[in-house]
Length: 242
Image 1 (cartoon, helix red, strand yellow):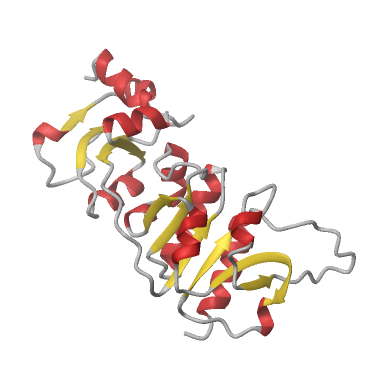
Image 2: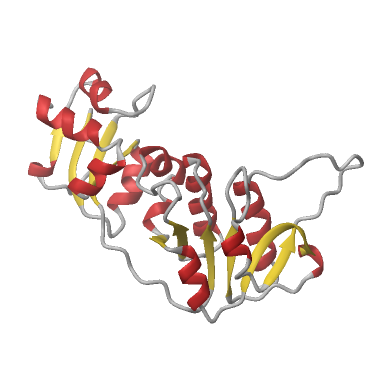
């Protein structure tokens, strides 16, 4: 059974201020929860409508009814379980390898998809500006489909981070060099910009290389690509010659 206080705590975690205060976030659905249980994330408590998971301490599991799950779920159609996990301390980002940096990406679905893309393409570190949507937002967590367990996401002053790095910095711009004609390195930082405004002027000034995905349509009237779609194309090119 879920108490009123537990319902209040769990539903409060839909807001960033309470996630920060309690150092907790939640995930829903068997696949996502299982991925996080198999990771280094520390389970705080699991609420489930059935015994889907094995090997979890009895004091960390509460069997609940579908109606009780509806009261704590952030989904329109609850998915059998909800688990609370402890938000870990951020890990440092090394100044080597391929790193993705996001400049003010606000849409939870976009961030979640980009985290999945980083996982797919073997990008271990994702640097977000302080204005980006929170990676522990429930919609982001769901969109990652468990990839959040394998990608280190940190939030920092992006301008300061880019100014200090010794890595080449690749900015994505409409007037950049055709990415299909460039030899992409395996060490560097790739900046992806805000959904509406692209990369900020401050970050643009720190980009050492300007790249672009060319348009091939006859009319060439499409203004831009969705940031997650663009990230998929760009990461594929960076990894093509590995």
